[in-house]
Image 1 (tube, helix red, strand yellow):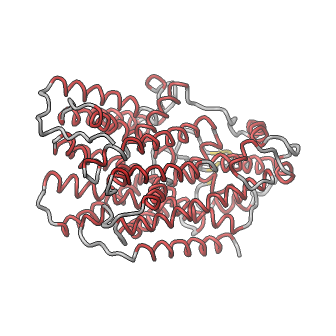
Image 2: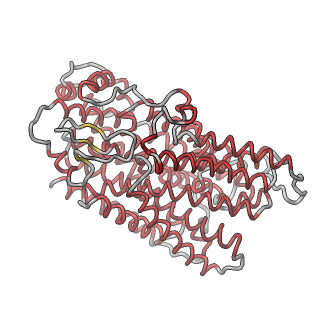
Image 3: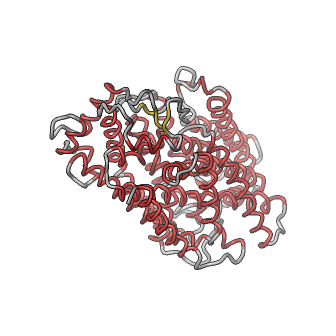
Length: 557
């Protein structure tokens, strides 16, 4: 069977399994749409959280970023890992004690301010909307290659897939589906990483690829001696074929630190992940779920460097082949529109050079193309595609739930229509989530960066908007609702303005020479968070102290 047939079979089988899990339970009431109606076993909740976290950015785009620039990719690995550890420490023992189930509800409860909750809901919609657009583009890349479809059509098909998957079940059944999806996406990624590593080094253990030497087939592929370290081999060959050096980066030290801190703060304040742990019945269960999730996430990330090295090796092998005709894998990807001479890649870089008459590839397609570059069996390619689609759809489903909750429950029912019935709320939630998903698909057609860069922008906005208020809510009883409200407005407004200026108004200026203090749009969230914290403290101190009944700070763990 060819690659396309294998891919259809594997994807169809995996999604049939997810749907069987989801249809076991029907939604009965709006509350069941946002949180489980019964207890979820903490390890299962941890696996589901990991599946919701490991998105198209982690599966597809992160490896491509690492393959092109190790320092740039390391920003995301370090920032996300440290941020999730902070999320586990902050959310599980403290924030769960409020008894609320979404981040805007938490803000309104802690500061005694419905207005602060409404601002938080609006910011949550913006963060989740941006994050969702990246997942839709990631799923579309898979569909564009293997259905095949033009990329714009594939974006809207992926949006429909995410909506169908989400609306079939409530959070309890979605948790079961995400457990199944983690098994698929993590298993698929380890199969991919192991096969790529074995092809290059002779060892199937991806965690050792960074330290391994070239095996016989890898040495023949790259034209290097057997036993030469893989990292050295792919680094040495890069510049000769127009691929940037592995250690090269546009980021200066200030931007590297700022981007990492923005990802840490954004991860700890990410609305849909905070809501998942707030939905656990007890703080101890939230803590254990977060610990399990962190372990499963780190396990997944341990294989990412191997995939990145293999993708880079595949690029170099294609460039040095000297074939006059394009390889079959380039012909296949050309039909998707992700490989062309005039490629408009969604990044500051002009796409990845392929050494074939000036053609370039979208960086987000590198990981999925790697097994084809190295001529691995079709079933490996199919498993990799199924895992990538599972990652995008699983993360997208959690984001759609978060969008519905923020728009209908937190923004509408929490402020404007408090007497809204459960049935009407559920209908509004589904309708608004559907509408916002369609708008996210439109953004995915002209994204502000690659998948991983767009997710980084969403995390920076989350950190700027929510992290100062979350921290003050836990540590500072003098913080007021008015201070939290204006802190969120200032942090989010500054960050949105900066990103909009460089990514939409003047993208030609999106270079280190024009960045403020050398900080990129991915890193500006840390400046937004500092500004938000300063405004929160100033407004809180200048105004009257909170009333006795207003402060509901969570107790100690």
